[in-house]
Length: 291
Ligand SMILES: NC(=O)c1ccc[n+]([C@@H]2O[C@H](COP(=O)([O-])OP(=O)(O)OC[C@H]3O[C@@H](n4cnc5c(N)ncnc54)[C@H](OP(=O)(O)O)[C@@H]3O)[C@@H](O)[C@H]2O)c1
Image (tube, rainbow, N blue to C red; front, top):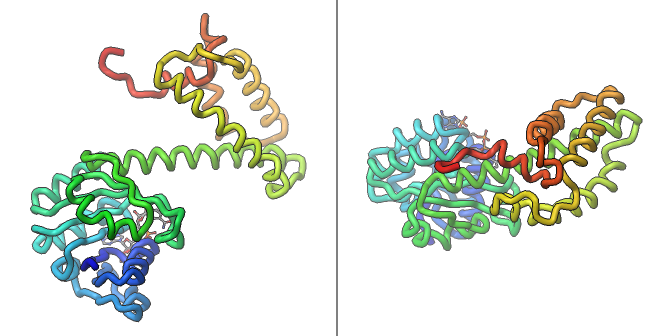
């Protein structure tokens, strides 16, 4: 069993602490605003008066606050106690912020892991909870068994920014899905069809369309968007144009889908009508040296 500090008792920090207590770890908790530790104390947590005190009582400090500005403030408060300990930062942020935090921790002689939580608080410890980690492999291996208790622990590499990169990329996919749902539902809603009723058609359709992704991925990885094309960019630009015309005619806002048609039209040119729509990836990807 490990001795663990949980720094930050928002909805997520509470869930992490509760799960670790259930698993029998010795948990010390701290939150900027007092009064949030009562339920955890009833389950056996000890409340520390400062972040430094919580860290000093533990081998591992799990930091989960609103953002990296808040995380930096807590790390500064806890700095005197961090040397020789492990800081696991599960605060949501950017890859650049994660890399800067890793450097800061190294300067404080703390081992550092960055993490991205792909779960809501009630999911913590459950079978669908996934937490992405990056940073020192030795540190991850040393604490993997404890971290597995919070959810499937997936280690992505030594670059501390990798967990955040994958976290934000997965969320980008999620928001794209939600955007499609909102746009499609607004279209049928214009004729009085309810969202719940429409879902019966939409979910199987979207599930079937997920089957297109491996083909797109192959084209993106190879850079060749002309292999095995069954629905070309020319046809799909006309089709998406029809969709946006219909959306406008129905009095529905086009905001969520219009940027995709702009990309299709920008990509469409002499010789690209027969390539796949995966070609639009070339318009949004970062240009690499040699391209
Ligand atoms: N909730 C989710 O569904 C979810 C899912 C995945 C990832 N996350 C990530 O988990 C992290 C925590 O989320 P949450 O849901 O727990 O948020 P929350 O319920 O809003 O709690 C925010 C926490 O941050 C603390 N905080 C804010 N500013 C601070 C500062 N300047 N100094 C010290 N502490 C500060 C708050 O302390 P006070 O109580 O003193 O205000 C509180 O403990 C976020 O990065 C979030 O993106 C959340």
